Image (cartoon, rainbow, N blue to C red; front, side, top):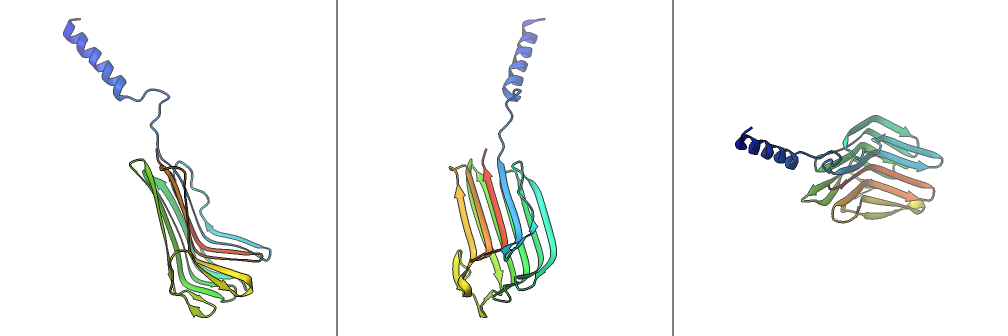
Length: 204
């Protein structure tokens, strides 16, 4: 074997070692979290979680669920419940929505309630965002036009309604999570969430 051939072989071996992943050293990938629940209610001995995707695996994927309608007399009536959550590449997204909402015998009503969240990696840093779309909201017979995040409204019977409830958290610059609840009613022995979406990501 002449020197020129030997040199080419050595260069080829070095290139293979440099550019090929070594055994046991898998390339790092981002991990995800997400969940969408169209309706969650706990009141007077009743517990509901409808159109609930369940938690998104850390490896990501795509989860969807839907329910045509639900009617629990005096507590909640809603139609067209849907939830979806997904995670891949550098982002995760979740959405929950319902239509024709009637809560607590008409105390709170809306034509449409949607919640959206997303979490994204860019340059190793995580960022999150979220929003609600609420159409035709009426509380105690009065229309509600202020749909800014975390608007609190007092209701009869010691109840409280939070409109477009938004919470976020982070664990360092590379990890973040956000949850949006379209409507959230709390009070003595009652907790009702309409359209809840959560998305999170930890960047590689």
